[in-house]
Amino acid sequence: QNEFAKEVNFLKIELEAVRQDRDSQLAQVQSLTADIAKQKEVARRCGAELENAMRRVAALEEGGLLQRETIRTLQIQLASANEKLT
Image 1 (cartoon, helix red, strand yellow):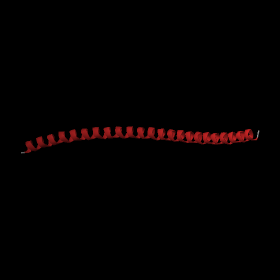
Image 2 (image 1 turned 90 degrees about the vertical axis):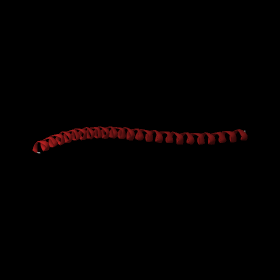
Image 3 (image 1 turned 180 degrees about the vertical axis):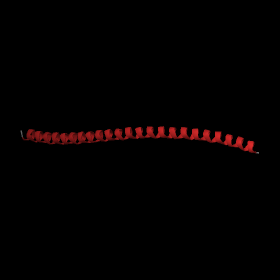
């Protein structure tokens, strides 16, 4: 019976170690899950910021194109006016 008591005691200690390991792993999973959620939020915000930046770039490019066309038109008008003066 002494051997049986030793075995029971050993199993209790082993069971406690397994429970502690489980609890530790659960805490790690919860921490990693929280980290993933934070990273997803950061990625979402970065995606939105990138999208806004791309829209601004497109608007600036369009504005630059319109300005180039205006300059070209004014250069043609200036050349025409200079020809009439000479």
